[in-house]
Image (cartoon, rainbow, N blue to C red; front, top):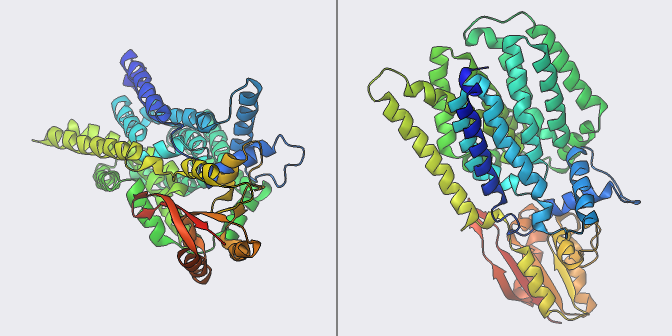
Length: 477
């Protein structure tokens, strides 16, 4: 443990960092509408407490935790609105920021870890998942100490750290299986740590590797995670390396990726083992995600756990650069730090303003349809589970859509039945949802909307080249 981690100034700064993270994560927490995956989370979390739950999720940690929170909120009389539903993810997001600085201080140093924590606190990518009723905020809150403790144990040989790291890694994997993208980088570091500078360690690495490999194999082969990964492979079997690269470039920010890559090279020339440890996990996770994207549909959210480690690479190396006795080194380090903070802060500003939390306006669209419809009208939507949350809030299992016809790529012909009913119909279409439809099915639906329906309302939204505009079309027989 480094001395600067023990000082009261560090703890005071960590408390201030937690306050900043909390303010950002609770700001406009209930402003954004639900989206489909949040509705799925509400369904699956409630399902653990229903007599007829249907199929339960294969990885259930976050759903059990959220379900318990929903039950508690109902018990004390709180309405389950967007703010209440997202409260726990916001808390887990705060913990993710704090753990980056707290656990990272041992390897990076107190000031460097605090700077890394600031980057994670400001990162729009982390903000988004901290304001999202999904599993990723809990995953990162567990995966960050998991990676840091396991890496530290490979350097020091401390068995307590190794055991705690494995427990955190298991928790992260059961929060979401994508936490396992940290494993390749951890193994690479453990195998080659002697070449990264310093002494080779106490000789316990091989035993630790065997135990870790056995534990991870048991998680994958003997638990429901195996089925969860297999289902994802079957459902999203299309390769997507272009999607993965483009989303990583946007969400991780080019400034962070470029700075981390350049500073990793500098750390390699100095054989700085601790920086190379952070880089092994961070870039190893990105490499594992890219490899997966060559087989299945994967994007940046599956490697979110890499973010704190890339931030620690930058924080540690910038602190070293600032104290390098070369002319202009401190100025260069300060300029690079300022660019990173400004870029992330600017991204956070856009997230809260022009990018509207990266969420389409389903709440407003449902209110519009509800106020203009007649009792006999039909409603169809590409995110039927979200419409169910707003138009039929008493349904605790919104996967069982009753308030509308759910238009999805697996039952594309559903919309063709609606004109035969002879009733007025409202079509709530999120443009990006149609990207997953087969081109022929998408073409038939788009032609029907343009030729036989009338556009009556829309909520435009575009960011990162992604079309999130929500449109309402009305069909009059």
